[in-house]
Length: 278
Ligand SMILES: [Zn+2]
Image (tube, rainbow, N blue to C red):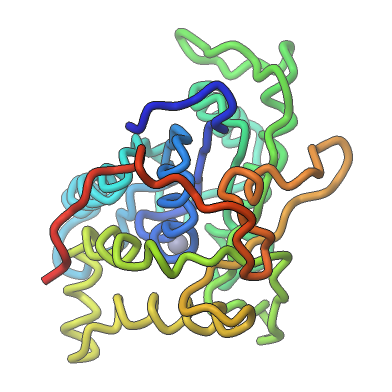
């Protein structure tokens, strides 16, 4: 973990499944890590339906390890909330579980799934995290844990990642609120996704090409073209009352959200170099 400074924001990136974060925001996380921000990557499930060969607990163990290895490449911690695939629902018990995860991570900035996406788990995660950011500040909202973490002092800045292929369920494009230029860290983002070997190999068998890594590069280039850079990631900030509305994410990495760099991100304190992907 890079040494954090007093002003470095604490980051929680929480999505439904192992590899969602690597597809949608790993480049931005790498930039934040380079800026000295402590980062926790969380998944709601361990991806227990992500195999046609292994049983649920066997593939879950593999995928937790893959997610942990990917997070480690940027010095981030990894945790799983242990929901199960296709069984994430917006209910009382689930929201309390997400609140406890927020109180343990104590983020200033939360990145999560978009409210409209192709998969029910993504949409349920989005709503649970959105509401948990507020609930986590309320002392009387108990999480029923043995040793509950204290309430958050303030509501974190909340951002939605891109939907898969950037479209809603009617196929309409969902415009980005702003875009982060991740060209300089794209190789690292690619290596993070490559940690998910169980999924990469599955697609490799199905398609006969490395569709897993190709899809990541293709989508990043598509978003990048919108602001004239090689690779970008799209976000929308949640601006509902009473969540913070200044853009602390962009301020943390010195970008304007349209491809301009306001200051050079300090990568000297970031993760040590990792051998290139083979
Ligand atoms: Zn997913």
